[in-house]
Length: 68
Image (cartoon, rainbow, N blue to C red; front, side):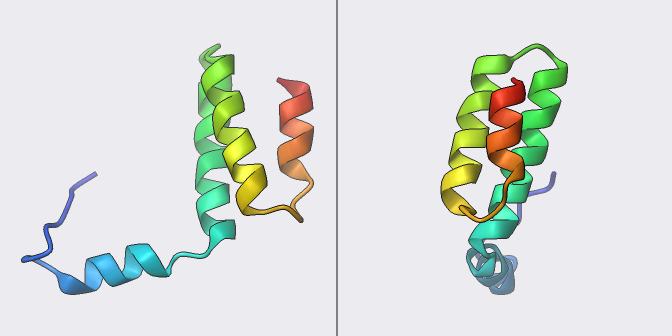
């Protein structure tokens, strides 16, 4: 992933901060699933718990926590 500095693109920072909690939760959930596949269960659980806090209505995160 290429990082863009503030000087290079002011819009980049607006885009990052404009992401909704549910989008961030999905990203954390996807990363958690990858960690689970690599047997990094504790790290995956931490991400899933963060995702659950960000998107309380999504039932996937409690399911994945229980599955882990």
